[in-house]
Image (cartoon, rainbow, N blue to C red; front, side):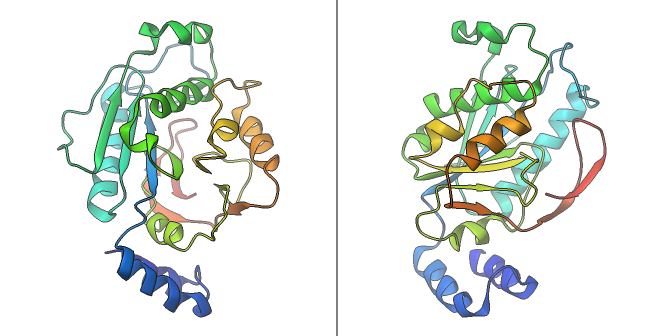
Length: 240
């Protein structure tokens, strides 16, 4: 499967022909980017005070998350961690050795008291990421973590990770003002995924943190994805 992904990336121009053969050979030998974990963030039941959010129906949100999780499991060989912060554990999704589901209620966490009344959904996501980092078996032993907003499946991601240059400290989307995909090496995790957001506009928080890492941040190309409804403005997203 991974070799097919890499071949497709090369055809689309994401991999230079000079490195294509080397990447394909390495993928065949290694089998998968086992040192990297995909972290999907999810909230099935949203707080009513959250601003800038049109998709509030829990069933609709769950349906989108389940579709994405199943795609990550069936169309990649990457380890997947799902962190959900309203107590929903996705019973519809068959468990596998590649999947870890971490479900908790933010209101039950004493160290999340600072989030009471917080209207920025990004601040709640930062806490969920931190919860996953503290509680996940997969994340405790990985060298690179890629946070993806849980509703999105990115078909090209496995091939991109396999071709990622050595020494990459983090990755970001082509548009630095977006944060559906953010990755960090183990060394950069404390900086990139620190749970306290400095302000409500979390896109700016992500941007400042990644800018502060210097020249070892990989900017992704524009990535086509299956048409997916955004949770914020309700638009249909076809690229990240």
